[in-house]
Structures are given as C-alpha cells and as structure tokens.
Amino acid sequence: MRKQTGTSVLRPTFCLFLAAGIACSAYGLVDTLLPANGPRYVNSIGVPLPDDALPPEQQVLRVFSESRPYNEWFRTVYKGAAGKYIIAEPLTRTNRNFVLRGGAAERWEMSDDGLVWTFHLRPGLQWSDGKPLTARDYVFSLRRGADPENAYDFGWYYQPIRNWRDVVARKVPVDSLGVWATDDLTLHVATEDPTPHLPLLLTYSWVSPEHAVRKYGDTWSTRPETCISSGPFVMVEWIKGERMVYEANPMYRGADRPYLEKLVHKMFNLTTPPPRLPAYEAGEIDFTDVENQAELARLLSDDNLSGQVHTWPNFWTHYLFFDVTKPPFNDRRVRLAMSLAIDRAAICRSALKGFAIPGYAMLPPGFPAFSGNVYEESQRYDPERARQLLAEAGYPDGRGLPELDMWLRNEIAMHRDAAEGLQAMLQRNLDMKVEVRNVENKVFMDGLNNHTLAFGLVPYEFDFVDPSNLLGLWRSNGRHNWNNAAFDALMTAADAEVRDPDRRIALYREAERLLVEDVAGVFLWHRQRAQVWKPYLKGSALEPNASGFRTWRGDQVMSSSITLYIGGDEPELALPGR
Image (cartoon, rainbow, N blue to C red; front, side, top):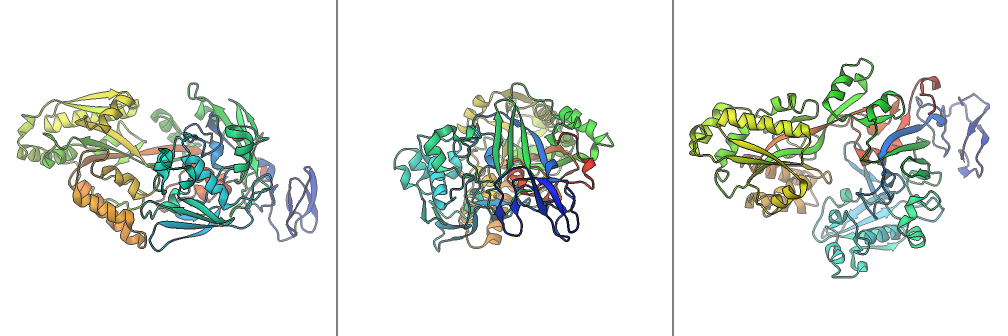
C-alpha cells in the first residue's frame, strides 16, 4: 500500500488511471504505477490522499444516525435520513466560516433590479447512473418542494422565491414558480423582493433526480439499487434499523472529490437511543455529541480523552420575553432592572455548566454581524442599579408587582434548573415573585403566537446563517409584540441591501443595538455544544474557524465530508476493523 519508487503497487480499487483519466471497469487488485514524486496513497476513485492519511482501506468514518424513512431533501427534511446531505449536490456550499463557495454552481450573479439570480453550473456534472446533472434537475427539485401534492415539510424556508407561497396554496400552478433553466448549465431563480442572502439559502438545495422520481416514486432514495447520487457518496447498503453504508462516488464530478472511502451510519430510534459515549470509548464510532454534564465532566477529567473534547457556542439564544403592552413590562425600566438583576455568568457556571456561555444580545459569537462584547457592560450584573430602576418605575422593593408566571416550552432538566436560578435571582434582588411553569410544546406555542403569554423563557435556533434570520424574529407584529418603527426600517433596509455587504451588516448591527437598548427581551445565554471526535479524524472542516472554534455542525460537516479523512503516521495506528 505504500508508495514505492519506480515500482508498481497493488491496491483494491475502482480506480481512475491518473495519467489518462480513464475509469477502470473492474473491482479487484489493480497494478497501478505511482511516480516517485507522487502521493503516498490514492483512493479508489483516483483522489490523492493527504500526506498524513492512512491507506484507502482505512478511510472509513463511523457515526450514529437516527433511523428515518427517506434520503431525499426535497421529499422531507424532518423525516429525512442523514444520507440526504451526501448523495446530492447543492448549488452552493459554505466553508467552516460560512463563507459561500460553489457547489454545483461555479458562479452566480444578480440582475440589476436585484430580483433574479442566475447560477452557472459546472460543466460535466452527472448522476451516478451516468446521466447528466443539469439546471433542469434543480428546477424539478424546487418545484417538487413547492408542489402541494408533495406536502413538503420544509417549504417555509423557500418562501422568498417568487410565487412559492401561491404554489403551495394552490393559487397558481407549479410551473409558475420563479425558477427556470435557459439551458443545461444556466438556472434562474426569481424572488418576490430583493434577497441578498438567496445564494446562502440555496446551500439547502440538495438536488433530486427527476428521472428516478418519475420511475420509482417517493421510494427511489430508500434502496441502494434505485438510489441515484449526484453527490460525493453513493449508497451501497441500507439495512433498516441497523446501518446505512455509503461509498465514494466514482461518477462524482463536483469541485472537491472525497478522501473517505466509506461512511457507515449506525442506525437507532429515538425511543431506544444508543450508548453514544460507551460506543465512542470502545472504538465503535469516531464522533458523538456529549449529552450531559456528568459525561462532560468525566471526559474533561480524563487525561486521554480531554483533548478529544470540543465545545463551541451554537447559533442558539435563550432569552426572556414580555408582553410589553401591559404593566409592569410596558415600562422599559422594569425590563432593564430584570436584566441587571440576573448574573448570567453564575447561571452558566452552575446550572448550565459546560453547555452555555453568557449572552447579552440576540446574535451569538461567530454569527454574521455579531458585535462582540459591546453590550456586556450595559447588561452587566448590577443588583443595586436594578433595584433603583425598579423603584423609579414605581415598584420599590418589588411592592405593587403582581406575581408572575415564567412560561417554559417543555424544557430539559438543565434549562429548568437555569430557570429556577433566574427565579431565585429575581426574588433575591428585586423581591419579584415568579412561578416557573414548564408546559407542553403546543400549549406554549399557542400562547406565544397568540401573544397571550405575559412572560416567558424561550430559545431560538438559527434556520440559516444570516442576521435577517435571528433579528427578523423581532419585527413588529411577529413572534413578540414589541413594536419599534426604527428597528423595522433598519431591518427592511438591510434585507434589501444587495450591493454593499458591509453596509448591510452595519444596518443589522444598528437594528440589534435598538433591540438591546430598548430591552425588547433579556438575552441570557447562547447554547454551547460539547462533542468528541477521534484525533485521527482530520480535514479542513474540523480545523479552527475564524472565531477559534473547532466545530462539527451537522449538515455543514457532512456536506464538507469531502475534506475529512483518517490520518496517522503509521497504518498500525488505525483501529481494528476500520
């Protein structure tokens, strides 16, 4: 398996002759001459591996994956298996810093009025059955998502596309959707309004094969013999409830071809979750999330495992919200007093230890338009100032305040403990009597959407990495009843700014400043994730990002699985059975 100067080596392969670029047609042992100055190893689809990579037969990544019925993005997201990210090619991708890069599209541009985006596909893309992948496949896929007969469960995400809502509502036919192809390599997407982040939205555009859907129906993605791939991997095995196996796709012609030979997804059902950490420690999987504080503490105290732990703030913000139209919350001084009465750092050190960092605004660290620690001073823990503000508002020592219910949405124990910590701080520092009420999801969401909850604690996790997503939550007549015309105007201007990205970010930062200064909500913490992965798992997707975090962000890492590989100085370092 090692390179040998001037000689030939044997390797198991479905290979490409490197010099001629001609595909071998047979599996088995192939005599391949590697030049003296060539790569140490070349994988089965002809990709030279990094210098520190282990041999191709050990380029196998093993993870747990929830058992779900489909493998097609535009059929279902919430019931879709993890393979939907790796068997299909999106129009665009992002790197670990969420900087856009090409996927199927090698470039794109916007019309003068900002309403039509044109994506130019890479020549030579194809499906694993040899058929060309064209712009018309993306037209079919987006129409499939909007088609009310498909009852797609993620359709809200694509509403900026022209006529999407009307197609879903059956007001206009499916072919009225604002997507069309002028030739095999040119796709046009029209939007209702200028949408500067449309190319970012279309990182979620894992294409469906029209010819397979027409022939096999919705089940095309559920069997290896009918599951056609345009992405870096192709399904070779699916044993329901047990495992899914993917191998490098020799027909893949995308921008980056994979180093890994194989991905093994060990399936589980939510009713019987797997022993994640024991499986990781036993060498049965290469990556997993750390699920609780006891696990995290044990890992961090273990000299052998602590270096494999990676923590990073997710794009997820917990905050207190209010009915700002009614006393006592219609007085900004009351809302600010509550913010200053809460010791965020103490909550994160105790109830949320290891799983949260203090938050002082809506946008988390690493998110576009994040303002750093600008608001930490104005929202710092200051009980004396908090009591002064409450007295100025007419509630000295809490007198005259009603008893309050703090509503929670079916929260886990860790967040219930944090809520009780908030309850104790408000009682101690403001003499504010608060009852914590943890209710089922539907009851909470009905109250939130109907604005019948006076006070509550709620999280919000990003849908896409753009400030319009997290800050748009606070527009007038939206999720909350805080209305601010200046905020709305800034958001409208930023959302429509398609020419100057720096000005757009500046507008969002100014909008967030109004949000924080008016204390529309009390921003408390950003959820932190804890993960472990093996030290031999390498690749650019797992290197520190611009914020200094090493992260494994679900679909982003799987979409970037082309950059992952198994590394080590010697083959003997790999685990048995890999």
